[in-house]
Amino acid sequence: MPASRSAASVLAAFTALSALSGACAALKPGAEAPRFTAPACQSGREYTFSLAQALGSGPVVVYFFPADYTSGCDLEAHAFAADKAAFAAAHAQVVGVSADGVARLKAFSKDPDYCAGAFPVVSDPEGRVAHAFGLDVFHGLGFLKDVRGERIGHGFIPRTTFVVRPDGRIATVCSSHDPSTHASEALAAVRAMAGAR
Image 1 (tube, helix red, strand yellow):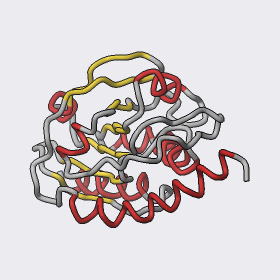
Image 2 (cartoon, rainbow, N blue to C red):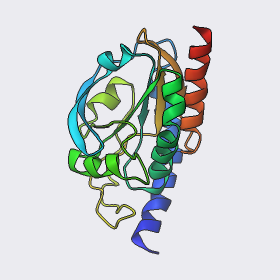
Image 3 (cartoon, helix red, strand yellow):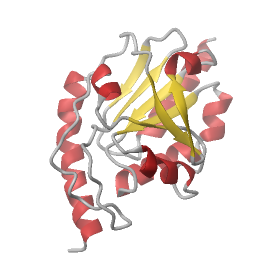
């Protein structure tokens, strides 16, 4: 079995199992979202992302994903990027968070097939942001290779999406292990907020 298919199989199993544990521990709707700042990349440019600053413009979708350049995470990033205009119309921003290092995220953030420069991705290699949102980082799978054949080399954060209202409270949590559902569920949540204004 090729390395990328093997990695995809292991990641699928990891995501299915971790979705359960991540969902149990994750912050719930109504909880205050941690106002984090962390290194991020957008369109290949590195900067410091601030959730507090982003919330000043409207709701923020904070989506955690296991690893860039893996099949499910690539699909999820593409879905969020494809819906950029729809999120903007609802006055919402999107930010991805993974344990990937900045060097990997620089490439992923500008890759036209995935993030396409549409939103920032935060580097959380020590799991500080993940832990603040009640998510564990799973270690022991860093030996896997991504779809490019490169070693991933870091822990995995469970696929979990938080929609944060402008007041800093969590409105919705999506913990489905299906990466194709997170963007559409988050978009429905921010559209409902926009309609309620």
